[in-house]
Picture 1 (cartoon, rainbow over the protein chains, first blue to last red):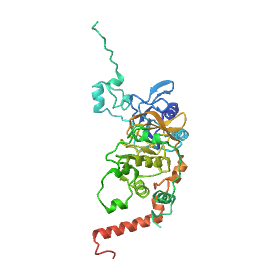
Picture 2 (cartoon, one colour):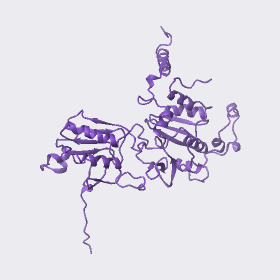
Picture 3 (tube, each protein chain N blue to C red):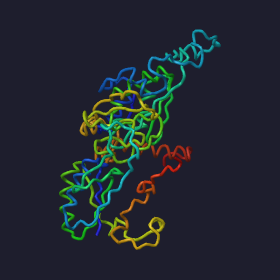
Picture 4 (tube, one colour):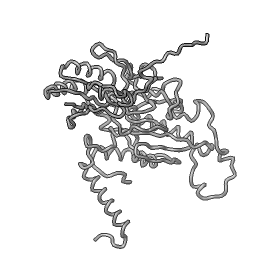
Length: 150
Length: 253
């Protein structure tokens, strides 16, 4: 079962960090996806204005690539939803919706894009829907050129 | 007395205040002339005004009764270029909104041309007049640093969710929130060219003040349907206009 947390405003990095950390405390929460408008890749703004930063979730560094417009959470028990609601009330003072109108917000089926990206390999179920479909080859791979001319 | 807008709600009253040229709008912040010029980006601060024709005094104008009746505005007298400023108003309780801006601009300013679109409003006038008008608009109730954007281009954002800190989405990030001071600063001019020094616009208004000052009917604020007077007048206009337009001879039955 998936739910969608839809805050009435787009969340900044600090609030996202706090919410994600609390969500990860639940054993019942299987997967979490953040969805929203993308941050620019290279930030020319002064750091005091900047929103994009590396957040810490349970001790792991995560570079935020998007602003948090929605959070999709996969869980199994109804009772967890109430607990999530409590957390949201704490961190989202301007209001939010928790939507459960769909059974699945996170994609569970492999798509053509996945096929192009990964070929015919067996993609583990828990990775389907977790990839950023707009990511480019350069985002994940660094090619070091060796200069052989000398 | 001129009748500007019907209705008994606070929103209706605010609309009347804006459109009434005799009503003095509250001054909320101070922005220097130089900063206004920087925001507009039409000329460098201190630079001479460029002109498109010689000053009117030096021109040999034909005899014309209208020319005698109408006093030219300063910019026209000097032969300035026509320049603009454009504002975007968020749907989330921005103080002004495009149609109201159009009505009030035309009531308040002379020698201007204004254009309305769903989310933005441009005002054009001779350069030195546009600077004077811009200063007035930026310093008064027309403008809130978070919910109103000064955007010459790339205006998208008026109907999007706000940022957590209350700022309207702006793809070019001209107005930005300084996390250290809680003040909104403008780091680019209205069409997105970097400024050398940020222009301090000031603190955003809080939610209560915005709800009291807004001219936008919203279900979560003042709902339009609750303003019986305004709805009644609107319906009357609608019916009269429909009959009048479709079959003027038939009229009311």
